[in-house]
Length: 318
Image (cartoon, rainbow, N blue to C red; front, side, top):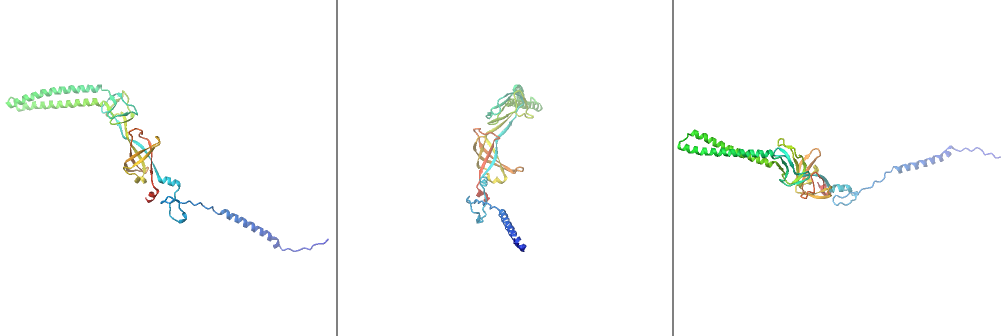
């Protein structure tokens, strides 16, 4: 058998292939990591020109303001809230004391001006009137008698039949009788007025929103007993809450549309007053509008939305 001699191979020739393969592997890994770290390209959003409302190229470097579709909707319409209020609201009280004999209305009834709401028992008032009438009759009789004495005394004074002091006494009695008759006349007028006041009437056309007494109850003038609450709703007020920053958008005489979701309809509102005192808690002020409500379709306390259309261009100029 032929034997091979030992051949010497340098170690560098053995290690080199392994080093080369390791370098290639590391380079591949580094390239993958570099690729993974690259950020994704962000999608550019085109702005909307405040002058034309069209999309513009952002590469131009212009200072055009950016608006989204939601921004457009928000800036083109301002929505405020409001609540209807009665044009007038009155708590009716008695002008004479007594016991309630008849209640003529119920809550929700419409009443005309001077129509009866409550009638008090007139028994005591009738007695007072009769007493005042009798007192006036007696005062008139005393006056007539004093007048005749005064006329006779005046003739006697001129003829020397009585002294001046005697005439002065008769003259004083005559004047007192005249004053007594006038006082009795006033007392009778007051009794007659109390008889009329026994029927409490509506001060204006309106709706009874609250009835506060029932038949058989006693009412007094001092302290006054509330009988009913009446509201005038032929014309309604709409109180709109407006932020102080939007104060310039409302002017007296302007007309706006108010949407009542309870009715599903819009009504016209005329601005009649701006309360320029700002509420420090809400930083808002009140705008008062009037609504023609002769059909009584609306009631006080109803919620409304008021939408104002504004232009983005005008808003930027401000």
